[in-house]
Amino acid sequence: MLKGLKFLARQLETGKLTLPGFYADWAWPTFNIVRVLLYAFTVALVFPYLPGSDSRVFQGVSVFVGIIFSLGSSSAIGNLIAGLVITYMRPFKIGDRIKIKDVTGFVAEKSLFVIRIRTIKNEYITFPNMTVLNSDITNYNTSEEEGTAALVLHTKVTMGYDVPWRAVYDTLVKAAVKTPHIEETPKPFVLQTSLDDFYASYEINVYTREVEKVALIYSLLYQNIQDEFKSAGISLRAPHYYSKIPV
Image 1 (cartoon, rainbow, N blue to C red):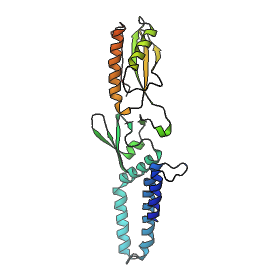
Image 2: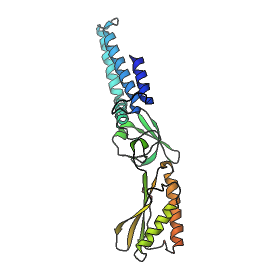
Image 3: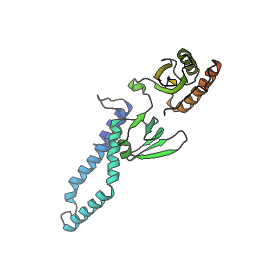
Image 4: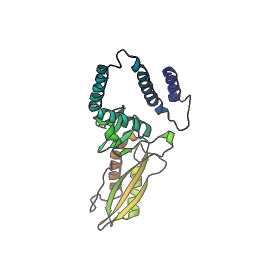
């Protein structure tokens, strides 16, 4: 049975066999679950035929081992179950850029007990699966197989009312168009997000599919914003000037 199930899992993983509503990355986790259940079922069948299985000593040892296992592995079992739930939820894949709590990085490892994230500083941070399951997860990756659009990067700029809004729009779009690693289509666009006492708030939005270069794209975008505002004769020393990376 295990050989047959292993062959079936391999066919599902490679896409040679498809089942409606069943994803390829579910193949091996499902196989492992079924394998454990088969082993457990086999042990349950064999147990009554073990020599001395009906003796009080054997039963006492079995109960003692069961209690020790239950007390010592409650967290491990919780992380194991959480790992299975995360697998079937499919919130991210290996290599995706995600944010858990205050940590943003790339998924380096997914196991039944922990998730390891690599930050852009090459720091590896480990989260127990129970922590991941109970946290909000932001996935910055786009998936072609799911038909989702490119990731939108955006940053806020505030300028005084002495600067015409059309000039701010044009300058921000020019800066965005000159920034590498962004999509030509859809084109960058500007939103005016608020009118405050001393300044107006603008938001420049660009599309990218190169999520591994988000920090670099923001840096280049800021450089181009400075250059384009200087070329347009608009001072960045306007009152209450503000710009911030949102991730």
